[in-house]
Image 1 (tube, helix red, strand yellow):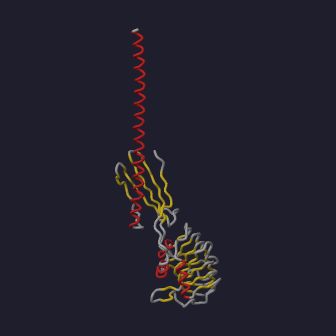
Image 2 (tube, rainbow, N blue to C red):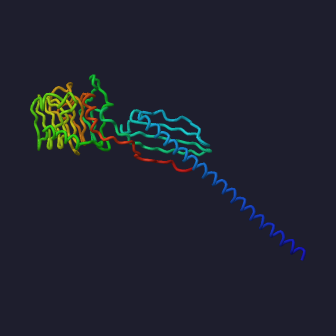
Image 3 (tube, helix red, strand yellow):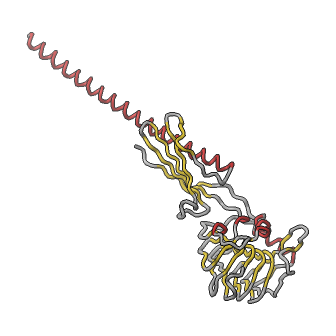
Length: 308
């Protein structure tokens, strides 16, 4: 009887010991799991905070690129880097990359956000949603300046085309169909009213075909394509809002500016036959920019590294 009781007692002791050991193991695993979950959440929250801190700085100054270097944040160390087309040519000039990385309790989390930043048209001489070929862009002093043009833009910038067309209507500058303007059109000046800085605006509902040796003036809203032949010249801005519009030059001296002002095309800009030179003129571009519909920054994509 005594042996039996002893065996039963030992059995219960072993059983309870096993149960206690398993409970301890489960408790330890739960603590470890909770610790990992906390570290992952803390790292994610810190990296997210880094993105929003960068967005706040960019709202104050769109040209801010300093980022944050190893900044302590709660239980984490936070680093935020900013990259644009100047240090990563694969990025569109209209896109900024924000990389926010946090390290919390040996867990590292990185969030990569692409920010869309529409440019001000007044700071550009060439904008195209497709390729720009055989074109040289120069600044107002005549120096080549690649920062004055954007090609392969993801979208046409929002623009008050209706406002331009209304101005063309009020000036009697609406042409139904194709148009080959005479030399000096419409009044040998970029301005309709120079006193109040009101530009000439011409709405061409077909193609614009500028004969060789002809100089024209103003802002041209062209629904079709644009041909600049021979030594044709434009003092002003060429705006082609429809997909597929092209700009061509059939000859002339490539060292001379075919356009003094700027081109904005929802398509290809190609200096076929000879090279097109565009010379930026801030005076014209700032007037054209007044018709740009301002657009705030927007998030293009948000990617997070996997949890540890």
